[in-house]
Length: 390
Image (cartoon, rainbow, N blue to C red; front, side, top):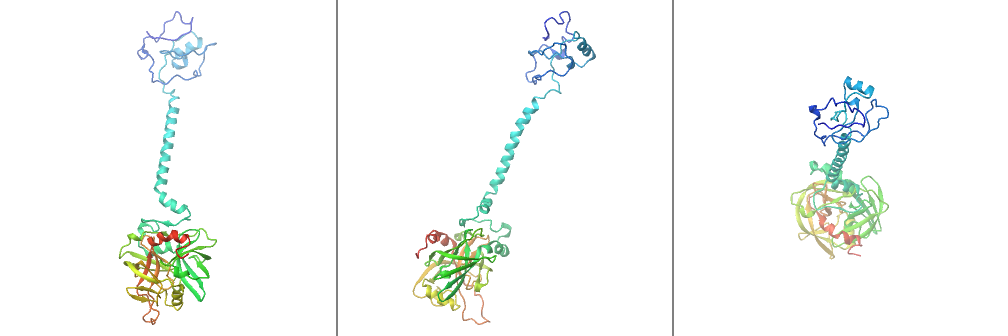
């Protein structure tokens, strides 16, 4: 028998007209149905009626929920109609959607966070290199994104990417001047160059690719490797070069040289790596080299038992060099030798210059040498500490 709810004293002599209806059998209310609303539906109520707790198997006694004319009439006199059992009404699932929305919201937020994190993670390598300001040396043992992969080996793209990191150096000497090149390695103005470019200088002026001029001071020198480190005064936000990995260089690799030969700032030439591990001997006697350089013969060096650009003197040092056929001339010393990806693989240091050539025989003979960048990186801490000559 269907269990119903009623007030004491009401309908004592009336039988429930819905008793026995198949849809309201004596089974308990489905536990998965949503609970009844916390308030009574807006409908006419008997005077003095108070809401009562709902017990299992019972529902709100509301004529408004029973939809027939008979129920309406009963509601009017307060004595007619039976107690309506609670049924799942489609219009009353209000508590369910909020729970679904509350669950779906955090999941969507977590998904969005995951997507953003993935995007940031994918671009970390490139984003850090651009946002750090590059106040430290940008060095890499692998390929970098200096030049896009689609532009690898393209001389124009390499020149555009690296030229802002190559400077012209003018040193005032006791008996004249010296012109060379340098490579910016920190955004606040640390510059690598050859020792013979600045050796014995009383003052140093540096010009960047955008025409700005700076005064520089010597930080450290290493005449045995023909390397020097200078620092610009009051410089910031400079474009830095990326130091690559000279151990991975192969004969035949495309290379680009950038420097200021004969004072022609930002000159770009290209060629290949002609040979590896060439024993190049240079002078460590500053006065010997400077005298020859001022005479237009370039920095003297010895290779294969022969001397070029004059006499190296008795005080010399030998290092392993990369050989290239990229055109190098006096003024390229200290400049950049760059691989197809835009990484610095060497510091140009010695080149044959035919000082006695006539106009018909003048020109590059494709015999140039560069100090491998791995040698430079290994010596950098020593240069920053004042160099091996201090």
